[in-house]
Image (cartoon, rainbow, N blue to C red; front, side, top):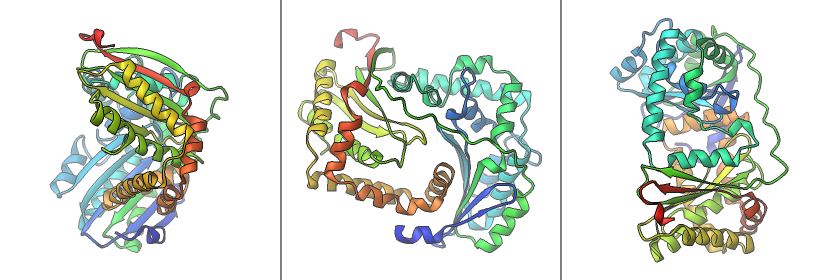
Length: 428
């Protein structure tokens, strides 16, 4: 892979007449190629009472199109030694394939066909509605701590509708959905002018661009309106709730804070704050709660990286000997410590090394670069910004971390969800 310094120069950007943005990242290191189509639609685009539609279409996009029968997309890619998938988050949906380099044209043909002529039919809708509801049962209802994490998002964004519901949506909304609503959602968002096609790997840019124009130029522009995010609420929001979880073996607690969007000032410092708190065995919360006290079996801290206002979370899952008041007091104390004093230069340098390794590793594969370049083009308007992203993390100072914590990780901004096993309520 080209170095990060060279990555920006190794990226070509072209916009077709129908609005499709094309990002090309040739790299001959391995005889494979990755294709990613990123649509600028996620759960933040959904209307109240019509949630889960973006995730539904992650499934429906594999149900056939004009020249590819239902299931044929999977069959054709796998028969030629490739792999594929699709993912949905709050701000985008993407579909990707990784193939031997000589099969690039197949991926372009398949993606263009479903962009132009997806089979949005009542039959496919009903079939995939049932699939999504089964996925909800498996990945939400039957997974420990997941309902608590979803409840936390509702509390953090209770006054901010784009992010007030989880990506998978409400099953009540999906049950009540009418086919006409679903078709309208597709017609509005799944269009060439709301999509980014990214190709990374072993290919010839000139020949590939001719193929792209041949297959994708017939996809219709639909003048999809840009999603405008309201400003963050002026008043800080704090809330608490308890979730009873029959899948949880021990209690857990999750804190959530509304913070500025990804790439906004302060966000980089907050991501490093999360690394300092809970990433690795030498992190502050791991050392105290997992190693020294053995009151938590795991700790974690993360951001969601939303285009709009984001969420910073801290989570601890307790051991059998752990007590929620004790663990919460330790988390509160570590958050106070972040606000009261900057981390040492040595501690922050270690966090930066961890982040650098993760960042660089994520760009090693053609698939990793295709997906991330597509997201940067979709969310931030220029895929080449990715080449400068690591530098913005490395420029964070200890005082930046303290300042961000003082501004955003305060008690009056903290929402908290306690998760209690239904059979072990006494552990509270």
